[in-house]
Length: 354
Image 1 (cartoon, helix red, strand yellow):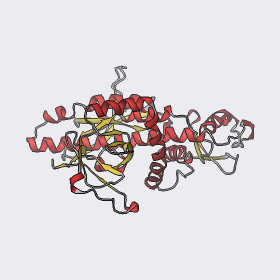
Image 2 (cartoon, rainbow, N blue to C red; image 1 turned 180 degrees about the horizontal axis):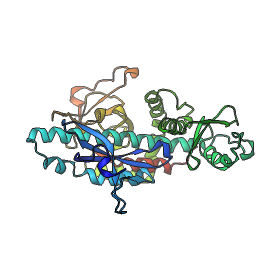
Image 3 (cartoon, rainbow, N blue to C red; image 1 turned 60 degrees about the vertical axis):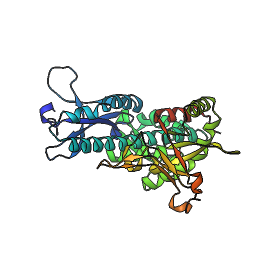
Image 4 (spheres, rainbow, N blue to C red; image 1 turned 120 degrees about the horizontal axis):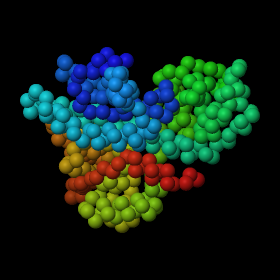
């Protein structure tokens, strides 16, 4: 397709961010957040010119999330500069910038969290029994799938759907070793195959409600996050944070929280909504967390789309009951720092699974 034929081609690009190209396996493609003529922001496929001189648009594709995320983060540092050249008043420019930043934060939160969960699911799957390559029952005339199917099951042996990207086919498990059912390969089945890789590593199903499944996985990951406190590289990070007067460090979906007192020190809390700010709102980096209770969930300071600044706080989830309050004399007002979510994925990978 020509560039001129691409939807939204002439609309200004405010930000970019990658999404998994589910129907093409592990590939990530960039999407562009564009300002439409009616003043709203909408995501469109981001396309590039490969220099062939034929004006054809090509998907902006990457082999890994890490590579694509790095490109997007660099581009999105100048969101406000791109908004400032538009013909809007200052209030409209601020609102548009905040909306764009919120859109990016939401996508980044989801992608980093799911990559962390996938990395841990693969580690947990290492302890599961695997089928032998000869035991696999294949579709009629499907002998060519055997090696790739075995490779998928060697990584994630408990999945019920696999996507064999090189063959452009997806298979569904009908029995313990029976993979004779061929199903359509499209974005829907690709997404299901990805979710199966994650969920099956935790003894869950990728076909269940994805939000509820991820909430269960977050609870399972908390004890593992606590083990990070024993890793020397993490201890150095936390030691440096204390030296700078920081008592709250955010890695991915977890918060390392320091409290003074006997046998307290560093502990791990979960992050509100599993992300880096409330419901994807723009993070207010200059804000502080005001803790009036001993809740296990931390909500970071954020900026509403109307520019209102909201301080961070602690709370419990509804299933935990009301958080134990602090005496007003012991309220905490804490600065924080957010570290790269990719670092959290790397740290999880550093831990051998027992």
